[in-house]
Each structure stands twice: as C-alpha cells, then as structure tokens.
Length: 133
Image 1 (cartoon, rainbow, N blue to C red):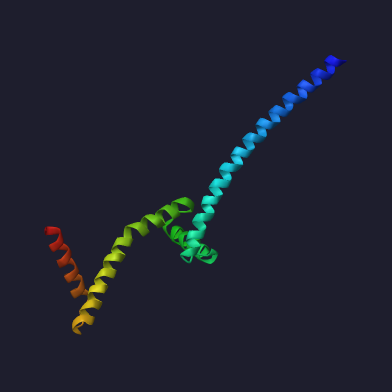
Image 2 (image 1 turned 90 degrees about the horizontal axis):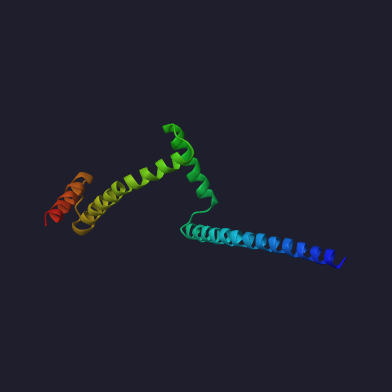
C-alpha cells in the first residue's frame, strides 16, 4: 500500500514536471509574441505620429487593390509592385520639386518668371557641372 502511494506520488510528480515544462514553453512563446506585438505597436504609434490613422490605411489598401486589379495583380504582389513604383518614381518627384524650387527662387530673387523648362534646363546644367568636377 505504501509502495502504491509512493508510485502514485512519483507519477503525479512526473506529470507535474511535464506540465511545468509545457507551461515554461508556453510562457517563452508568449513572451516572443508579446515582444513582436510590442514592436508592431511602436511602429503603429510612429505611423500615427506621422498622421496615419485607420482611415488612411484603409484608403491606402483600397488604392493598392484598385491599382493592382487594373494591372492584373492581387494581394502581396500588388503591395510589392506599389512600393517598388513608389521607390522608383520618388526620385523623379524630388527632381521635379527641385526644379520647381529653382523656378520659385528665380521669381523671388529677381522678379523674373522662369518657365518650368527654363528651370529644368538650369537644374540639369548645375547637376552636370557638379558631376564634371
């Protein structure tokens, strides 16, 4: 009878140790998820600080979906394509902004109006002269 009781206690101990190991494993997995979710929340807070709210994300999703459908692509491929285009054309956009700034500075400094083409020529002239140095 004492041996049976000891065997029962040993079995319960072994089961408790297995359960403890399982709970430790669950805790570790939950800590990893908590860390990942905390990072995601920090990223969302950073985006909110830039002015992105849920409405803007929905609008961005709708735009990406619409553009993707027009191109015959969906899902992750549409998102990838959208951001590749954004990266590719961003520098074109910046160049145009610099040209417009040249045009504005010209108008402000000597009260003469430069056409967009004049500003563009001056921009490329300056860039080329810098490249030749």
